[in-house]
Length: 288
Image (cartoon, rainbow, N blue to C red):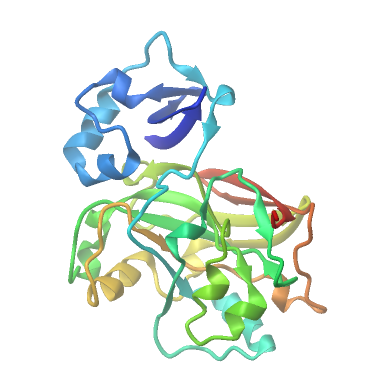
């Protein structure tokens, strides 16, 4: 099932995508919640009801709706650094050492952007960079999750572009500010539920800038897999339904190129993951 948050004629709702159409879930079953976060919080029974909603006469063509961030208001947006083998190698070129353990940072939830929303080139930096990532959406409240049980807390997967402001990122040990500028968290285009992709999917992920391939790898090249990440995080704090986990980016980022190649106004980033879909975001000047 592909779950979306969308806007049509000024009205925002949630739906599922089937055959090039968006089927509105609350209209198809008035017992279902009207927001994605509430749907995830309602747990597996609500997802089962969503699956059962049939197509009906007023299903909307996908081309007629605006797709928004599937989970626009999570409690947490967490991301792991240095989690692809070749990316660890290239990062050493800019002075980043190989970490001895999982390295996590927050992306402030105010950075969340839609799958096709504009990304702002900040007034205070010209070092805007891209990072395609597989994003895990947590499906139930959990703590101290064992690695072998981690799949059970995953609701589904999205494409994420962990857009980064490199000089601000590298200036602080936590990286949070440089990872959290407004608009730098595009996600989507939908949540693909776990039953479609499996527990540890090996998926090809790629990123293009203006049609030029910059990143190309497979999720089976992660240093710490999805289940290890969930076990590590949940040992420290409670994960909630709708929490987002960006699982690392492969090699090919602009800061590691020789010379570095940062994004400019007018550039278009396309991040795509096999079995999920693609998001595409244009860089624009930060508005006054």
